[in-house]
Image 1 (tube, rainbow, N blue to C red):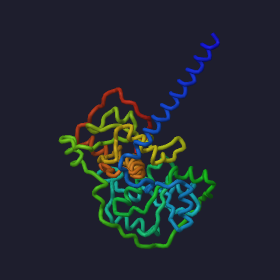
Image 2: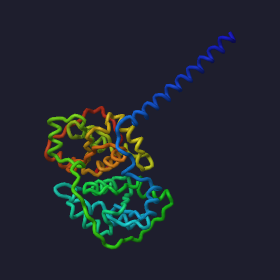
Image 3: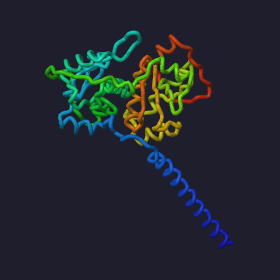
Image 4: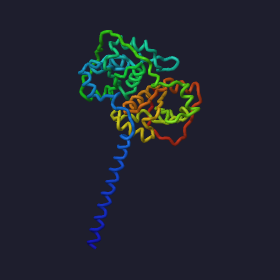
Length: 312
């Protein structure tokens, strides 16, 4: 009887070892799968607060993109203020991409040139900062980085805050050619609805509640909150890869992102580009344009997604 008990204990131990090995193999296969895909170089769009501080020591310019009122209440000491609202137009829909001259005027007046290393941050969810980054990218400048987690994450690094505005001398900012591969129009969206393209996907980055009320036909719902940790900082590039590969979204796909006015969409643009996804485009007219001119699709009621009440 004693031999039997010892034999059973030995078998239980072997089973535990086998289960442990299987778990390790499964995790390894998931992580290795990310490596096997042909991603672009990662970590080119987002910096951690510590990385931002190092870049500031090297002469980078820190920009708070909140409203002048919020900037006046609290901002990182030494940061200048360029509100996101100054880098959009609101016709024919809210938060549309402006023409190049507006970018040049706003940036130059603020003392920023196209040759500067630009760090942008906001006060929550990385949305406004990402939208400013996409706008600057649209006119050929990719020397701009979102500070992950924004104000709160920088404060966690014990960075001094202030209520006193910082300014820089006027300068000249020169835009480059518009990057047409970063944006799509309603006409293009309609064309792929009518004749779907291979390896092309539309991602609705709004909340599941908004998505369930209607979306662009064929779109999937991956809310922008999936891109953040609970701390408010962006997920690592590897975790973003795992998140989207789990949805069968691979780096060789053309990815079109939208929300209500493409601010949340820009947050997803930044996450995906930083994770090495190659072709990510923002539908700038966004839901406001689509729902006015086209017929939405009401999805099935069995879709689950994180929830957010943000309506940007």
